[in-house]
Length: 349
Image (cartoon, rainbow, N blue to C red; front, top):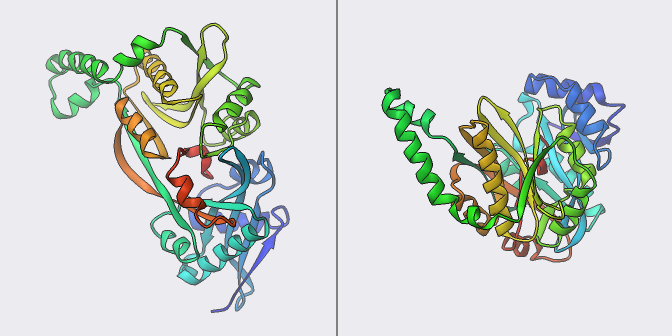
């Protein structure tokens, strides 16, 4: 089989991309195209289409979504490799490799540049083969905030399950939340509806404390979270009681008494994150939330802090893979051993 790859204009090839998406994923593409292709806060994505020469038809595509990454305090242009699609009859290693090689060529042209991807089980071997390196694991972590519902799964006796849940809830508080409770007097919280200029001030401070972190400026967060077609999100903010300076935030959605955290940010150190989670968990308990989850890739010290706040590792969702067009051969290794994290807002969905 003979294939060729070409960079395309997303507006001229909208019908081609829509057709590829809908026939392979059986889902609506129009709202996604408007959001992540046409209105992307970081600019128009670079898109490559794969043509099958024998039929003169497009059978695959990949998109490079622009992303700003801060490495050791320096802003680096990056791309999230996403929306990889190949028609079922062409799903061998060859076509996918051709598309990823086009992405790598673009990365080299834009050097210094980074490609970031969250491959599934099928595309993982492809990205390894073309030169991507494993940066870290991306996992789902869960915390139970009220135990009654979970006890009922194993004990269908509400009269016993309820008082037992009260005891367990108190023990969980003693185990995970006493320390921040005793040290949080200088902080307060607020649930806000929008990202304002105070978040830019937070981002300036956050960027200085990580070896590797994606842009969390006000402009990006407005687009990525508030304008997302994938749900409605709450923004929980931790503030200094006197100055009202933002010390951190949690962005989340709430469905059926379950909280899904899609992003977090915190100022300075892990103590601030402990305070942020304490106030956030306390608030959600007041809303009768049963549990919360977060998808995250992070360095060990950050993962361990989640565990100290009562989160447990539910499952590994996959690997975070990186390709670097940099003269520093040890760049990926050095930053992966440093302080970093990635959440849902660093992915393409």
